[in-house]
Amino acid sequence: MKLCRFNEDRLGVVVDGAIRDITDVQTEIRANARYDMKGDAVIASLPEWRSRMEEAAESAEPIDVASVDLLPPIARPCKTMAAPVNYEAHVAEMAAQPHVTGEDKGAQRPSGIQNQGIFLKANSAVVGPSEGVAIRFPDRRNDHEVEFVIIVGKEGSRIKREDAMDYVAGYTLGLDMTVRGIEDRSFRKSCDGYAPVGPWMVTADEIPDPGNVPFTVHLNGNLQQDAHTKDLIFDVPRLIEFASEFYTIYPGDYLFTGSPPGVSEVHPGDVMRCNCELIGEMEVVVREAE
Ligand code: MN
Image (cartoon, rainbow, N blue to C red; front, side):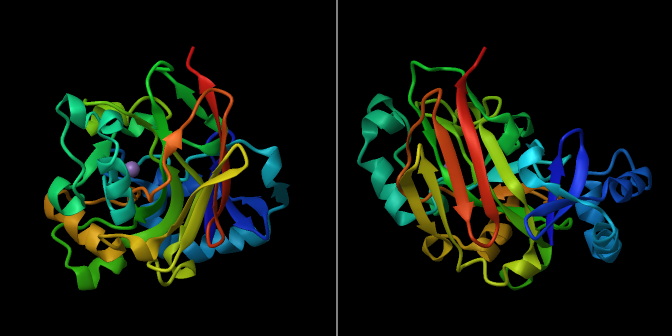
């Protein structure tokens, strides 16, 4: 099942390229959820409510995807985690450019996730495809990093690799937008809009092997990152295991799995088109911040 959020906080199921509005189900789920719960009520309720969502979708009128504003698929993520250097070829690409990473000014040399751990992006940086990315520092280098993104399905801590897939609700695509420089990652990568996700969430059953997922980003029509999750240093179950050693994970948490090679600069006016056959396509426009 493909679940999307659109327009004014509406929930939809994407069927054959059209959206079926099931906001009534969302309203009912939220009405029965505790306000102080950690995580997202709709994602937490998926196992119990999925069949009702599918029934509601069947009786709803199809809406053209192109006619709506797509929002991020999760209304209330508890946190947005991200793997920093999780493809060997991207580690090499960044290590070869000390003037870009800030290593020449004292920043840490990129050396791989096993040494550098996971970092957090502010939830306030998360946007949907329709919102676009506003460049706050046009005089600095701003890069796109297209990433395969895990959406956590249920609460867990110190999860073992062999149990990890039970904690995955689904997947989406993300852009880990980055201001290059020497500051901490969580600072440089958390500008407003620096975490576009979408176009929607695909439930885990539709991607039975997350280690076998090709995905791309085109910048202004040119293929810029051509990636495959088989090249991840820490694969999806290992990332769940690793993250949950440090954090309790909650339903609706995002986990960006890391950027493949091919990162490049973006400027106002650019268009980033992320595609994954198993998920869908999202187009994100870059503009200058006001
Ligand atoms: Mn990244």
